[in-house]
Picture (cartoon, rainbow, N blue to C red):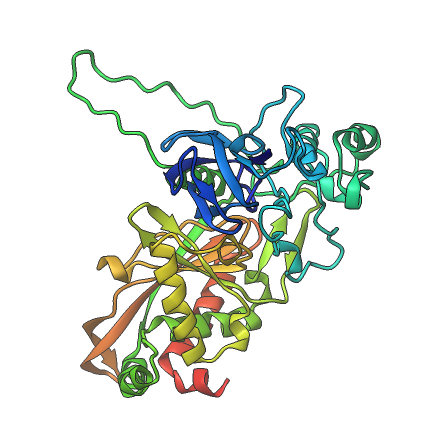
Length: 430
């Protein structure tokens, strides 16, 4: 029998809700076929069968929640009872501990390919991502221990519970937690919600994605003192250039919106103002300046706001950005975007214009230090050379972390963005 357990499919995913089973007890399944679709707070994950065989047990019904380490399905693959790979024993959550695991957990190699998160460029001085069991990760989190600094004694260097216990004593002083809910999280006493007696109400459970948004927004506003600046830029030349290139782009199968130009302008501005492409390490009073440019794009979906990421935006041209942006936005709305496409952003853009809004005060995507908001382009009367003319005007807003970025710096950054958008030929030449 093969006991297929729910292994973490990526960063921060510790439970999921079963959306759809493609098979039932008694069905024969082949290795690689999609067994079940599980909704997490980040993506809808299709979990493939790890072996050929007949399904003898289903661990969770549609609509039920399943945690990391719990049995998804038992498959009769012809092996003896309990004859499961050693990795399965390591990755199960046993010993009576809480099965909620926050952080990164390896995917069993018998189930699907290992996460490629560690293949990304790692910041200089940052330890490699550890291979560990869910129990070890949970214990390390509870003890405030950076599991990536612990040498594992298990197979292939896997960090076990015993390794965490042995390292806990000496690691407390040097532990450095870098997750989104690190030591900077503020504890706030929230008053209990009450409603008038006999009042007509309706209780609606929020989705896992909305829960993730609640936590992310709360941390951002609790940790980061925001300051927001607003301004306009005349984009007549940008409108003309986009109209000129739009048909040519369509002939090449590219949907050309204004957003690729904006991404390019923001990326160039980040290069001129490196403190905006950074994170503030509050525990050590230092800035981490990032030498790579991954632009997050806030996308409105029916389930809530999701931020996919365009990696290495500085290395891509306008058409490349347009093509990637279109596909990424589509996959995000369809909830088929991958976890790798949702992480690693260094700066975020949010588009109020798609909601027919001119201005807004965006919330910073922690642990970034800034976010820029884009409003809808409108024709307005402006004064040019002491004369009134009708022009295409793009509203902009920028929120920054006022602990490390002053209003004057934010103004200079916004001025650089405006200069590129007002003279878009510079975007094509860069």
